[in-house]
Length: 188
Image (cartoon, rainbow, N blue to C red; front, side, top):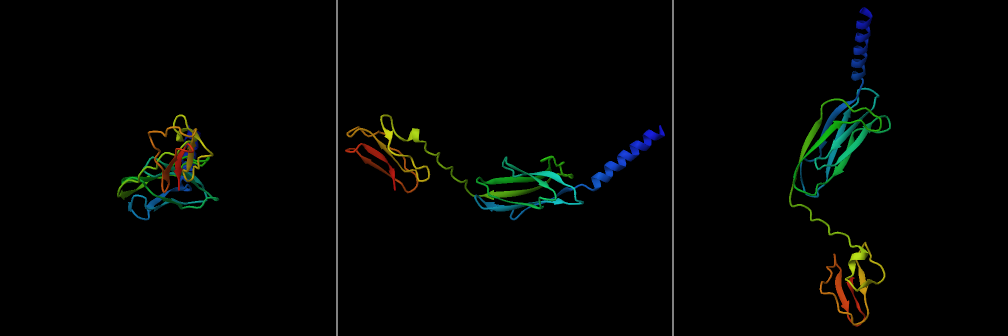
């Protein structure tokens, strides 16, 4: 019985000693806790290095996205990330331990900072045009659709009636049509 108790005491002591040499979650800070929609904010996640051990952690940005990271000899801490938010609201940004790349999770309680984002939401970008969807029925794409600028030309036999629904041209592009040549599209 004495041997079992000695083994148990030795095991407990080694576990406590291992915990004393581990890395633990430090602070998480934001360069500004109130920003406007689209404005950059720098988030800094610190790990308190108590020894040369390593550990894994995760930063949750409060918008459903996360960044896994590790603290070890080849990866310096703190982790510094620049973010911007496209909707107003309060974002609860967290720092927690997580097993990452075979690194055990950093110890200690979860840390957090709240970032308040003000202003109107950023307008959604229009969906990208697909070559197969650019031209109306009976018309074919002449050349190629330029995905960067959005320029395109649709062609059909000369005299073909132009489609009733005219395309909406993006940015600085303008709609054009030429019934005699059987063309329409968007160009600068």
